[in-house]
Image 1 (cartoon, one colour):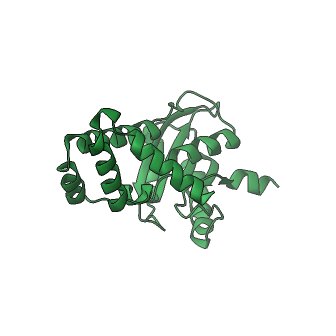
Image 2 (cartoon, one colour):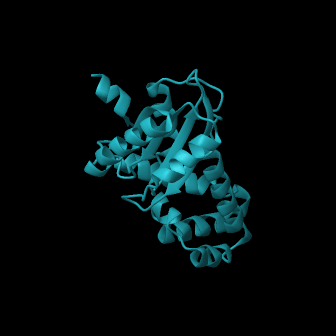
Image 3 (cartoon, one colour):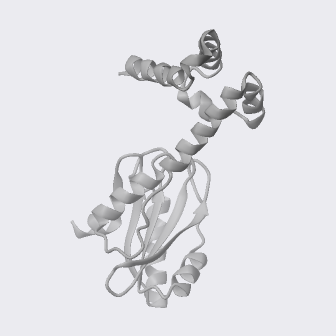
Length: 205
């Protein structure tokens, strides 16, 4: 499987350059593959390194423009506002949105009395393993949206969706805060690369 992935990567690199370049196509492809033997190596290029590569030939600048466009397309998702979701549907949608994120994101979805999502927003972005949470900002946003309920979603960049001790502690604080301000805590979700955890599903068992 790993060899097949590497082979596909090499093929895609060669397909990025027009055959009309002739011998230059071979040279550019080999040079790029030496510099970036894996897709992750391209992702980790610094701005200086990209500028240096773009000086090889005009085709390199067009290649990076195509990569940037691909990233925009990948991160584009349908608007979830105005739809009623089950935890399964929200979980799948959030996995699709955050599976490639390398930083932890905290997202709040606000719902009306029918549990339809009326607003949602990423409120915090943290590091690779943790994100500082501010409950007052969560409730401030929920009250501004006249939310009847909230769903808190955050991703674990490690891919492990099991709640940590900090997650358990925070969801209890969030539940108490919701009771105090009169907002329903509909769910507390953790998403990974291909799965999710739902506090609502877990407590219903």
